[in-house]
Length: 89
Image 1 (cartoon, rainbow, N blue to C red):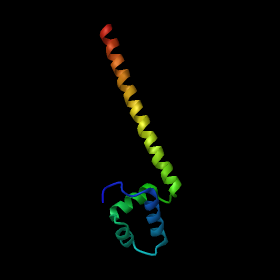
Image 2: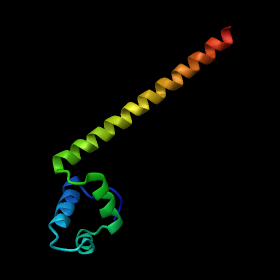
Image 3: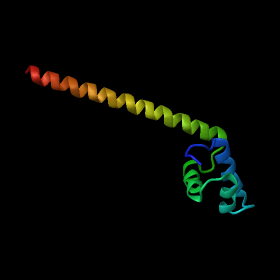
Image 4: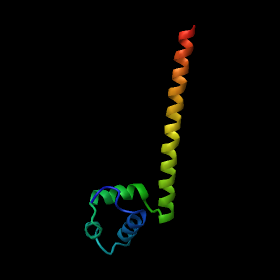
């Protein structure tokens, strides 16, 4: 499957099923159609989060990316202004 095809609800359900211990991680991953590497990546990323917390985390990550882009653009503008000021001296 392509990366990013699983929803937060599916991921959280998989992690919660794994915590219950009814099936092994390999069996759960086979049922969902993902790799065990993806499972452990999701476990590290989401931990014991609920669906609401996972969506909130995703929203915060998007906001952080947006803000980092703005800061980067402002840094470039400031550098450009410093270069212009240095040439005028």
